[in-house]
Length: 208
Length: 252
Image (cartoon, rainbow over all chains, first blue to last red; front, top):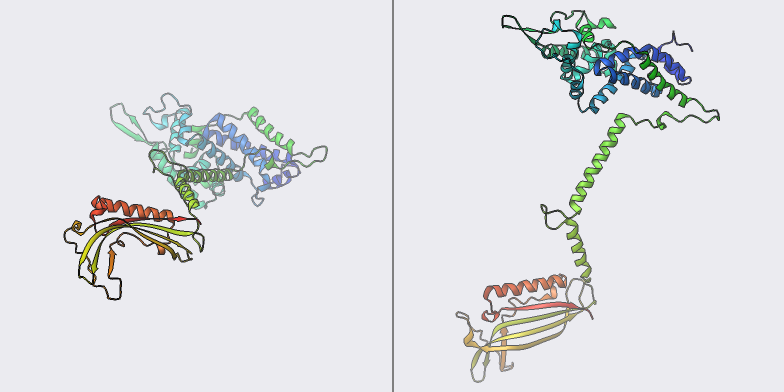
């Protein structure tokens, strides 16, 4: 069966007889899984996690529920489990995140909106690591994996409403954690939250 | 740019790396090759038999089981093995072994399996009276009473087959402790006009006929009785009715 028009479920089912059919699944989803993994754990570890995710998916493809036409939630579920396993292996997420390379002045008291991406990354990772797991999981999948609320609910096996409320709480917590103090020229302090000027009022469900 | 986009931009992700992608697919390709039927027609080994690590949950269950087993063994060893200086002096196992050795030395008590040997050494006050002349006297005596019994019944009772009473020491009544009155007996005309009565022997001498305890335990009881008698006054002669006995069970 040619892969172009087939759903993920069909490809996976056919790959049980012709394993080469799995190649199309790999081509469709590898990049999104790689980006997600690298955003969470960094470049090298993310690359390994992406490779492991597809290897595990191939080995377990016979257990795939063909009732889901798209394998995206399934693959991200595997990827997130591998990520969590790696983080646990590193003793704690905090330890692993703390080992990620940091910019020399990442902790300098400067305004978030003036930070470039490289400087904000370690601060963000630190803040993410301090989130409670029930908030971090949906937030990471939506924010870094670019999953919709529906897909995230499928991955975590929780209702969509729970995903929405947990992400809401995660965003509030993150804003609090990411508040940095900028020393003003006249000596006064001004608190600036990273999301203050960029917080969207859009419904994240637009992704789906 | 919304909040999520800003975060994604901040955390970033390297550009697509074709080499990394190729390496990832190569790993799957190896897996595919292993799944392909062999030219000989042999079926490929199931995925689960190719050295894959078991699922995380199963591994956790196995680890949990191992931890529980280790904890159980530790508890058992704590109970069975002799403890160190910080624990009790005697372990349960050592105590059980000691009791087992003791039990092995105790012969079962049953009908006709032997005889009960009771040896009582007793000291008491006696009095005598000549009914024809009206004279009376008091005396102290130490007697040795040996009783051999056999035919022990299931209830522990025995039939006396031999009883020996032998005076091993006598003394005069003036040795009586203050406040102790001699026993006088009127006697009867039909009886032996010269008779004496001995009392006090039963104060500590214990009749073992009804004692169902093992002989060794009985010996312990005898030793305790003797020690306590000595502890009270030192010389058993100074006490009315003091004495000791020992008993033993012998074969034959």
